[in-house]
Image 1 (tube, rainbow, N blue to C red):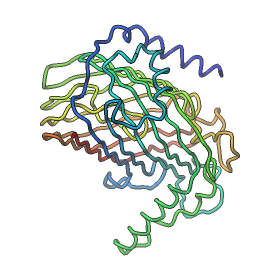
Image 2 (image 1 turned 180 degrees about the vertical axis):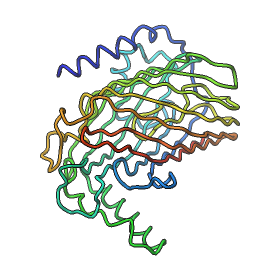
Image 3 (image 1 turned 60 degrees about the vertical axis):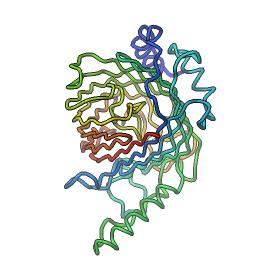
Length: 342
């Protein structure tokens, strides 16, 4: 294991292990559910530049073990045991199918662009286990995916074409550089992720502040620390905050019920490796070495979440610092997330 991975592992396990063996065993959700998550830079007015993180989509199912699709559950179980999760706990299971797409600034150029982030995409399926109570939430997730497929190319081209036709404009342009994406043609990848969230301060039904420590190992290897605050008419638990679920955010929705709250979150990542920038085993036309990547990356969001009976809807604006040292611009995108319990 590379030295940076060892440092990250020791750093995060020092946060994870002590509280996990003492977490209360309680089932955090009473219903099955489905989540639909959409990320798109077009959702934030006056900031749509159609570059960096350009779009993401995921659909997630929350079921009990005997009702869901869990092809990776043995791996998740073994990973969860490192954190104190066991089959005797009241565990909530989920699986998610999703996709992500990243692009450089100049979409009209078919040639490799060596001074901007590369085109990159991922299609993935993940399984996770979560245990939560009033003070702590711990989770383990295993993700398997494919880098470099044509799905994002076709989706972005189709979306741009429909937009131009409806709006009667010549923009957004046809993206012509997808042939230069990371692992073009397809390459298997995976990621193991742990999370531990703790409630720090709260006033019942009015506000709360929580911290989260995360660890990812695989095509994205990093450690993260986050702080989140909610205020409003709150009925759900602190660990249900719908922050960045498509990429690497929250692990679990709350119980169904009527509520509303504003929320804000901030997170910093210590980066060890990112295949979406550095490539993997397959040759990539444009990729960067670790010395060219920012060692610390910051992201944050502000959102409004509204729940009514069996439905919950979230609108959020997100911002992230640059992943590359020679690019100073920020990434901005919007999110619309919908949950339904049945």
